[in-house]
Amino acid sequence: MRLQRLTTALRTFSIPLRPQITASPSRYFGKLPLPVSGATVLKAAPTIPIIGSLFSSSAKAESSDNMSYPDQRSDDEWRAVLSPEQFRILREKGTERPYTGAYDAHYPSNGVYTCAGCDAPLYKANHKFKSGCGWPAYFDSVPGAVKRFTDSSFGMERTEIVCNNCGGHLGHVFKGEGYKTPTDERHCVNSVSLRFTEGDEKAKA
Ligand SMILES: [Zn+2]
Image (tube, rainbow, N blue to C red; front, side):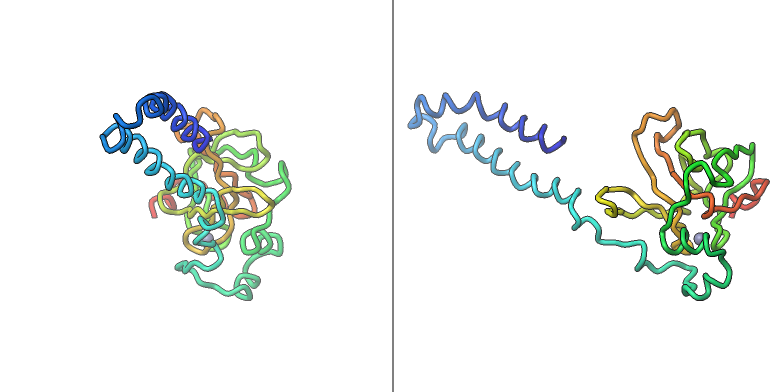
């Protein structure tokens, strides 16, 4: 979209200059108008691959698997404390079926959703909103609690979110969907990845 606009803009910009150049080349060669026009087009051209690279696989410099998190438990250690379903979703990036999660239609007035793996506070009750998507939805998180990665699985470009303390998979974040929330972001989180505690004490951590 942006690339297309840039290309159109360049084309629009360069068209009026061409007849002048063709009409009297000797008048313009070596003078300012032609080099300025040429330089602008040449200068703009290298930005096209840069814009393109934002959407290519080279942007995936980081993966949620190889990060160093404060909580560095091994898979065996996680298996010892998580249910098979929690392990599948938190440690193997699984997804619970929509409209089945414990917190999908859960709207407490206060309280904190912590990571079901390591208990780090992730979302407050007042971050939650009704999205109708079938999973718990939050428009924001506890500051610094959630880390984002580019996820190119299933032929889509999505933003994966994980717990910033243990790397546990939470779900994905989507932006610009038009929800009337302060951020217009939707953290689409598996209920299995969360544990709810009443009261706001944990969010102060
Ligand atoms: Zn965690």
